[in-house]
Structure formats: C-alpha cells, structure tokens
Amino acid sequence: MADIDFTQSLGMARATFTTISDAVNPDKLRTRIADLEKEASAPGLWDDTDHAQEVTSQLSSSQAMLKRLTDMEQRLDDVETLEALGEEMADADTINEAKAEVEQIRKDLADLEINTLLDGEYDERQAVVTIRSGAGGIDASDWAHMLLRMYLRWAERNGYKTKVLNTSYGEEGGIKSATFQVNEPYAYGKLSVEGGTHRLVRISPFDNQGRRQTSFAGVEVIPLVATSDHIDIPDSEIRVDTFQASGPGGQGVNTTYSAVRITHLPTGLVVSMQDERSQIQNRAAAMQVLESRLLVLKKEAERKKRKELAGDVKASWGDQIRSYVLHPYQMVKDLRTGYETSNTSGVFDGDIDAFLAAGIRWRHQERMREEAEE
Image 1 (cartoon, rainbow, N blue to C red):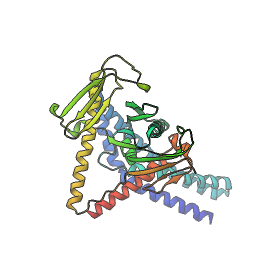
Image 2 (cartoon, helix red, strand yellow):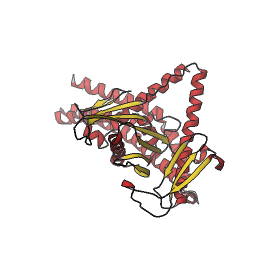
Image 3 (tube, one colour):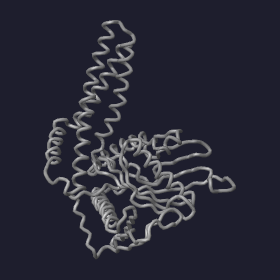
Image 4 (tube, rainbow, N blue to C red):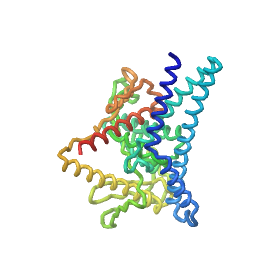
C-alpha cells in the first residue's frame, strides 16, 4: 500500500509540474531571458535608471523562475531514483526519506503554481499600496498603522524592497493614511487581492472602560506605471500645493516646503508625497502614483463598459474583504475565499502568504468565470 501511495503522490506531483511548465513555457522564458540579457548589457542602459532597474529586475525574476522549474524537474527525477533505490535495498529509512521529499515537492509545487496564476495585464508590475483609516476614530488610526506594519513585515520576510512614500499621522496616534511602494516583480499581482476594507474587532486599548470596538481601514493597491503606459496629464488638469513635511504629532522634520500635494482636477484624486528631500523629487514621485491611479481608473472604466455591453454589471469584488477578530475569540477570516486562521499574531507579523495564495486562486477563478460569461 505504501508503494501505491508513493506512486500516486509522485504521479500527482509530475502532473502538477507539467501543468505549471505548460503555463510558463520554458522555451519562451529562455527567449525572454536572452532578450533581457541583451538589453541589460546595452551601452547607456543606466542613463535611464528607472528603466534599467525594471530590466534588471525582470531579468532576475525570469532567471529565478527558470531555475525553479529546472530544479523542480531534477528533484522529481531524484526522488523517484531514491525511492527505487530504497525498495531495491529494502531500506525503510531511504523509502521514508523519499516519501517525505515527494510530499515537500508537492507543497513547493503548490507555491510555484501561484506564480503561474499571476497572468493579469499588470500582475508583473511593482505595487503601490495606500492604507487609509476608516470608521472607528483613534482605533481606526491605530488599525491602519497595524496594517502598514503587517504589509511591511510581509515584504521583509520575503526579501522584498519597500519604500514608504508618504505618511499622514493621526492627531492622537496611529495614521490617517500611508503610501508605500513594493519594488519587486509581481508585487502588484500578489498584493492586488488585498484591496478592499479590512475590519478589526477587539477590546479597545484606548477605551478606559475596556469595551469592544470595531474599526475599519481601507487598502488600495495599484500597479506602478511604466513608460509604455502613456498616461498624459496636462498641467491644466492638476493643482500643485507645497507644504512642510511633518512627522508624528505634527512635529516639523524640516523647515523647507519640500512636501508636495497634487490634485487631479477632473477626477478629484489627491496624491501627497513627503519622503524625498527635495520638492522636485516629491513632485516626480507624486506624479508617478497619480498616473498609476489614473491608469487603474481607465482600465476599470473599460472593464465596466465591457460588462455593460454583455448585460452584466454586478461587481466581482466585495468591499469588505477580511475580518480580524481578537475578542471574544482569535480569528482572521477572508470573506471571499473562506480561508481563516487563529494565528492572529502571525498574521499581524506579516505571515499572510496563505491569504494571498487563496486570494490569487479565487481571483483566477473569477476571471475565468467572467471570460466564460463574456
């Protein structure tokens, strides 16, 4: 029976690998790597730093994916050989080692499979994330700050570089809003499933009567624009205001008007930046985020128009996506996928990969459903 179990597990692992390999297309990936290597070695590449970083980042990501596929194929061959050797030698330890390895391979393949589902138009982009406190007063400001830490810790655990672009602090603590960038290929594809309202239920640390409080925070995730997106924003459509950058409690961190607030007049979108030292740098960063948000609005309008023409205007995503409950029990539950965990401390410390994986699978199913309906 044990032999059948191993054979079945190995067969399932190979079938999953074949599905992943077909989706990734190693030959096409090698061609892409060759093109990127050629572009990366071109003279003058670093004359445009942003473009150079994008090229080298895509090259690194593509090389890593190809290596993971190659290594996984080798692991499948090796574990099959190991199990056969154990059977031949009647060595129970070797057989058990092979069983353990094939189960680990299946888990690793599940993680690898997630990458093949990141096939949206902008999924491979870097991400810009904005967190805003909602209803709940000071608890909501504190909750927004907790979410900011959660995502930054997630990025840190995965080795992703981040940059906080702007923070607006609450008057009594926490934050009103914060915007940060995740400089990693496919960051948008992974984090875009986090967009929506996050609800926290707990005993308020700010209530001297120890009452339970429900607070809300909104998460917005947009793809970082690329030079090929062509979002034209005439100067006549924006208003630029400058102000002094500030830190917690309103304390001035400099005496120059380096912080920038850009208002897009036709849509009312407002972007503020104060992380950079100069006004010019903050304006450039703010314009990039504004372009990213306008790109999302443009694509969303196109998507809605297609659905109207198809006679279906119902939304695919609910607004409130996840509940975090700390009292009277411990539970974090995603309201779309049904995935939940009682390890709330782990989640708040950035252990959210399982939620992201469940969300990515759910989104892929929704996309397939929408395509079938169209």
